[in-house]
Amino acid sequence: MNPITDKLNVDNLILLALQEDISSEDVTTNSVMREYQKGTAQLICKQDGIVAGMDVFKRVFELLDENTEVSIYVKDGQEVKNGQIMADVTGDIRVLLSGERTALNYLQRMSGIATYTNRVAKLLEGSKTKLLDTRKTTPNMRIFEKYAVRAGGGYNHRYNLSDGVLIKDNHIGAAGGVRKAIEMAKEYAPFVRKIEVEVENLDMVREAVEAGADIIMLDNMSPEMMKDAIEIIDGRAETECSGNVTKENIQKILDVGVDYVSSGALTHSAPILDISLKNLHAI
Image (cartoon, rainbow, N blue to C red):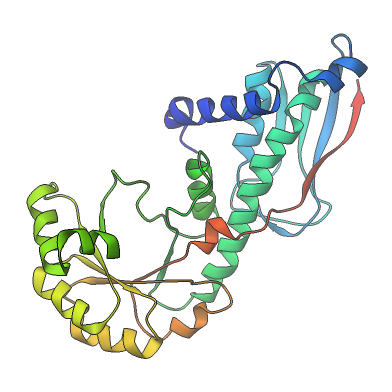
């Protein structure tokens, strides 16, 4: 992750997560460990997958105590195997105990997303279609989850509402039609921003093309309808497929020829990767 933006954004989010877990004190740890004792523990992978979030895992312990040492043996985006030692954590045993769950929550969640994304991305290999995420992310976890998508071999769609123009069905309803919505966006938005519009049928496709949309999102269309839409667009706009796309059904659109496919499942449906902090002992 980026060291500059990390300190501006990530540290604050990690501290909030720690504050959620330790509102006043870690009463269990303080009960069994009354004073400083140096110790070490191993981070062990318990399931094959793709790792993401090692620096976030490390940062949790550093924010609790800057003297904590985390020796990392794997890189984000790397394949890991069941039983593999991913890192050693050394420092105040109280810090290791209090930071364990928050650190693992980040690492397991991010690695799960990277693993799921990697499996879906592999299904698109050999095609021109790029795999994108969406804004269907966990509140206050977006920066971590979108990073995990990239670690897994996917690409990021817009980061947030300030990041780009994406005219969806309710925007079209508010504006009074596809053409009107695109015209209003062109008038308001800076010229450097692309304008994307979501369409649900071929009439809307024609209207979006004629109004000059830069990207046309084909929402919940059958493969046959998407092929018809691409013929209508005829290279005058980039194309994106969206709507309940998962690793189970993505192969149905492989031969359609869209430029992008976006999947909310990458972030909202990926299971965690099983990882544990084990073998804690004093040294």
